[in-house]
Every structure is written in structure tokens, then in C-alpha cells.
Length: 125
Image 1 (spheres, rainbow, N blue to C red):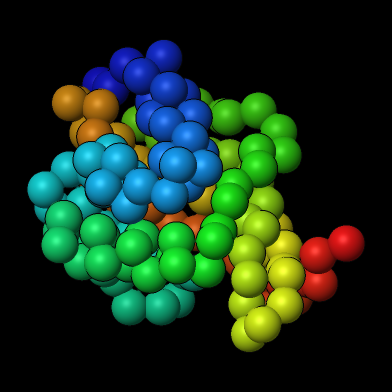
Image 2 (cartoon, helix red, strand yellow):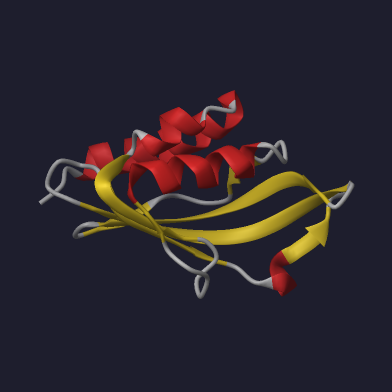
């Protein structure tokens, strides 16, 4: 089983890596065979190279993350609500998201799923 304290620390590192604009730091949280489904229903990004490319593109929008509540850790999952603040199509937006991270025994993310849809994207105020 993964370590709950390390799982929560990984979520905080995820937020800090976005603040630093470091796709490499985010990708380092993932296992070699990790997957990203962001948002849920879109094609999976598989493995380090695709994950790094996905986060590199995301960070080009100036995306910054804001935790909106505590990280919930149960078994091998960490779940957390947050807002993404970014520049989208020439204007500032906010997307309200809930992410799930599933961890392996080495405390690496093997699966990330982002729950949000068009109704969760708003003009930033």
C-alpha cells in the first residue's frame, strides 16, 4: 500500500509544480506506465513522454492551481477539489475540477482522472 502522507505530499507537489511552471516536476510524480485522463472521457495519455507533453501544453496557458478543500486519502487514492486559473482563447478563465490520483506501492501516480466539463469553466473574476 502507498503511504498516505506521501500521497498527500504528491498532491501538494502537483500544485507547486504548476506554480513553478515545471511539467517535468509533474511528470516525475507518475509511474513509468502512468495514465492521465483529463477530462474524463478524453483519450488517455500513457507513459512519461505523453504525460510530459500534456502537462507542457497545459502550462503554456499559464495554468495555476488553487486547492479548494482538503485532500481526501483512502486506500490507494487521493482525491482533491481545486480550481485551474488559466488563459483560454484570449481571456482569463477558471475551471472547477476534482482530480483522483491512484498510487502504486512506490507512491507514484499510476492513474489520474480529472472530473470537469464545459459547465465548470467560467470567466475569471
